[in-house]
Picture 1 (cartoon, rainbow, N blue to C red):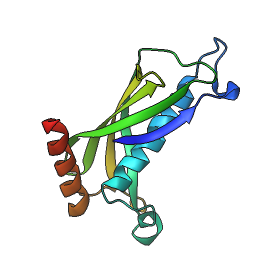
Picture 2 (cartoon, rainbow, N blue to C red):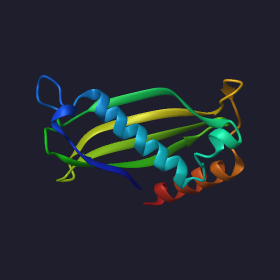
Picture 3 (cartoon, rainbow, N blue to C red):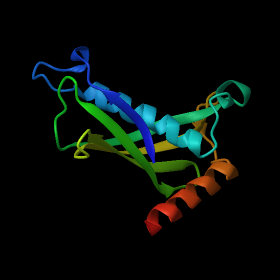
Picture 4 (cartoon, helix red, strand yellow):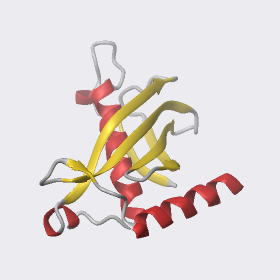
Amino acid sequence: MRTYSGVVYPAQTDAMGHMTVQYYVAAFDQAMWLLVHSLGYRPAWQTERGEGWADIRHDVTFSKELCVGSIFWVESSVVAVGKTSLSTRHRLFDADGQLSSTDEIKSVYFDLRERNALPLPASIRNSANERMTAFAKT
């Protein structure tokens, strides 16, 4: 599913004139929030329930540079569901549909007060499993 889109601004580039790593990661982070929202997580749970997410791993691969003015989008999918975690894949494409970067993220469902992992809520687990099954069929 498409989870984020944007354009590269001059302030987002490095000394080489390419979008800098921090902005790739920022795009992937925003894509992750849209993905978990589509699975049933609600930002209000942070204050209402004291529950949220903690990323424990990012594995970013770069394959094509983006320059100022480049239009891009991110497509995201669930690749694994654990007891307390989701593993997701986020692929960033340029306006021509060429892959620019990929981020494999492992995120743990988290008790924000106690600072420890929680079991995924059943609704999120079910949605994530359904999404993986649907993705596997395409």
